[in-house]
Image (cartoon, rainbow, N blue to C red):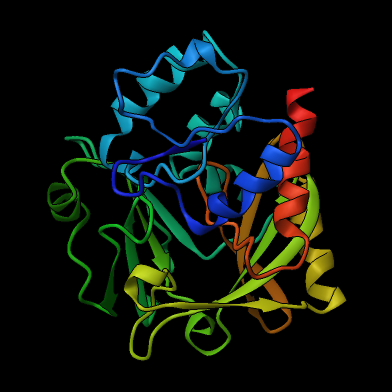
Length: 282
């Protein structure tokens, strides 16, 4: 299983998997994806898990994925991972009929090509985030009328693609729901809440997570979203992050690279994930 140098033994979820996989006769190693001394051809399967620095080295990570897939199967599939690595995929999902937060997509090259909704001036708050990022990296929030020009934002973000999104206040009042799918089947859900006064739900920013039994209406909506994305049905794992607004789910992100799956919060989740890995090996 793949991790990063800052977490050599993997996250808690990976630690839960190790004895389960060992009981199934699988010898598991946690490997830093940037460890040049590792011969990946000796493995039967590579599972991406806590490679949580990939967004800081996007080109290097993509090159490593291509090299690795030539010698061993990688899950999730490399094409899926690369597609999911740029949040512009949200535009494709919106075209499929999935509701996302109103979003402007800006290609942050020297010409700064922008597709920004005209109603942005009416938004109370605007969230700016790089298109390639994780854990709310370089994510900022601006009050109405205080958003810098697109070319200035592009310069601040180093010329990378970025998104301008209408802030969904229900993140602070209701929290964000993560629906976890294992081997395309629904496993469990978690509600993540930001720290008081913040808008980021990630643990490193003070956010918390607790197991959630979502109502059937929201679960049905999540399943409809998942069914509209072929990459979900072909992936070992997926985390669908959404916010409820007036009874409707708004998709925030579809995580198919290295999401925290909160296996320790849901009874049987680690067993389900281990069983899915064993099936992939067979």
